[in-house]
Each structure stands twice: as C-alpha cells, then as structure tokens.
Amino acid sequence: MAQTDTKEISYEDLKALVGKSQNLFLVDVRTQEEIDKGRIPGSVHIPVDTVDAALAMTPEDFKAKYGVAKPQLDAPEVVFHCQMGRRGATATNKASELGYVNARNYTGGYKEWSEKGGK
Image 1 (tube, one colour):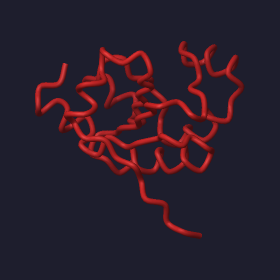
Image 2 (cartoon, rainbow, N blue to C red):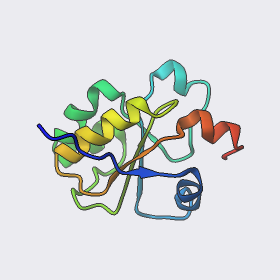
Image 3 (tube, rainbow, N blue to C red):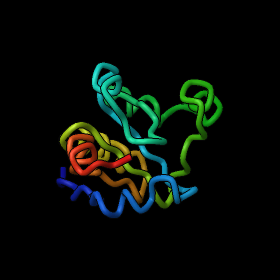
Image 4 (tube, helix red, strand yellow):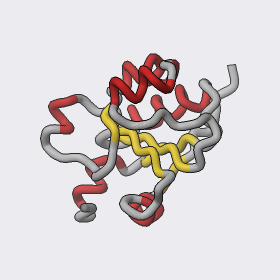
C-alpha cells in the first residue's frame, strides 16, 4: 500500500483561520487529560482511536455526539492536531482514506500553539 503524503498546515496558516473562517473544522485528537490543560478555541475533541468511527457516523449521529455538524468529504478546511504532531498525522491519514480530500495535520500541535501564545 502506498504511503500517502500527509498534508500539513503551519501555525501561521491555522492562526489565520481560527476565529475567522466559517469553514474551519478543527479536530483535537488528544486525550481528555491533555485537553483539560488547554485547547485551541473552536476545536472538536475526537480522540485519535475514535476518528475512524466518528467520521463513519451519519451526520445526525455525529451532531448528536459532538454537538457540531459533520464536515462534508470536500470540506475545504479539515484540520487535525494533537500535542506534537504524530497522532494528528495518523488521524489526518485516516480521514484522507475515508475520502476527506482536504484533511490536513497541524504538525506543531498544541505544544507549538501554546508556546507561540495562540489564543
């Protein structure tokens, strides 16, 4: 099986989208313990080991569980992140395999976001 190149997004690009883009679907794939210490505003918590199941849900079930609309497969800005990039890449690859053509990984993760003072 061919290794897919994970699409990535930088801190600067993500910062420009957070709070400004209606299309941004930002997924935090970290554990609840990590999220309790801080999170990127507007992110949706879907732990990395449940990303497959979450993205396979019907739009109705997804909204009921996560409180937000499930993104379309061609949604322009679907971004995954974790603490430092690895789990985010795993989740991004899963989403790509499920047909999310614009899925990207924020490689800096919450670690970089908080170090750079992202609010």
